[in-house]
Amino acid sequence: MAKRDFYDVLGVARDADEKALKSAYRKQAMKYHPDRNPDDAEAEAKFKEANEAYDTLKDPQKRAAYDRFGHAAFESGGFGGGGTGAHDFGSTMSDIFEEFFGMGGGGGRRSGGRERGADLRYNLDVTLEEAFNGKTVEIEVPTSVTCDTCSGSGAKPGTSPTTCRTCGGAGRVRAAQGFFTLERTCPTCQGRGQVISDPCTSCSGTGRKTQERTLSVNIPAGIEDGTRIRIAGEGEAGVRGGPSGDLYIFVSIRPHELFQRDGADLYCRVPISLTTAALGGQFDVPTVDGKTSRVKVPEGTQTGKQFRLRSKGMPIMRSTQMGDMYIQVTVETPTNLTRRQRELLAEFEKESSGETHPESAGFFSKVKDFIDNL
Image 1: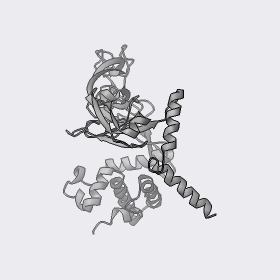
Image 2: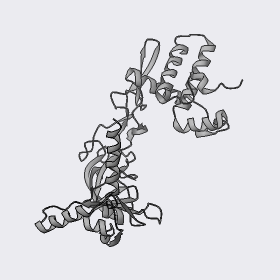
Image 3: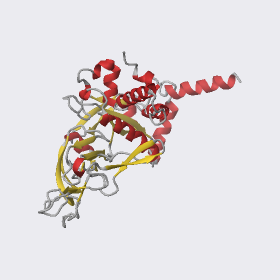
Image 4: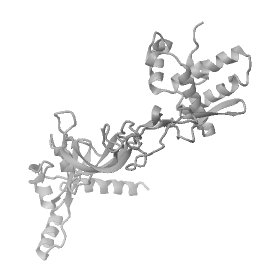
């Protein structure tokens, strides 16, 4: 008989999020669980069907494969080796019971007590110039490393961990609760499956020690604020020989006193004198590469006018292209005038007309029309 669509099995839409999937599965599992429906073959089949549907849809990679290929994605040893076995069933039920009853799996532990080490975060501040040029920086990272005395086993040299007698090495123990048989982490070995009778004196049985390491980090040219750099295997060492976590470096670019950045483009605000704006002129502006570029100001330039300097911005990562630099001018009103300067400005005002101040003349003309129409 052909399999039903997994979304129909759970009764959810195809765009259902993780929370909706889990809620729908919980209802199906409670309804058709064999303990509630003894000797009911149909209920047992629906329970297994719901379990298979949820196990597939809760995994982003499996779900993507199912959305694209349907059930064919898992046939003939397809995605990840095919269907849903007993191990997947236990994993799925563990997810639900851990969510609602506070019990469940071993929190990422591996057989033999080999836990993956924690990921680390390092915040790195760089200047805009460093982001422009790129550089290699050395950072000091306090982290956990594998104990060299016991080689990460946690046991005193000459001894070794022994299998936990409480759980028989499984890392979990079962307990009956009403209709259900629930699993929880073994309280004796904390889910590791092994116990250490004679711990290493250097690391107290953890298999790792705290140490500060110096790492070289490459900051590529054009890196943007908030970029995350992942260095695999440079996080904390795993417990008792487990794999190390990763180091994530979050890059922040310090504010610059001259430039503001927007992607690969830079912006610079430059004040110019009243006479330069009115008569025209030119000025030199610094660029982030340490050089200068000349900007020509046409006659009659107003505040807010922008000038574009092509390819004078930031490098674009993984590209040979460059952003642009935009110069925005602000016309500065003169202050602390001498008597003669005041006289000259007064003479200029007498000679002014709507042609010399077209914007203000147009505005006050609109004001006059507005008042006349009231």
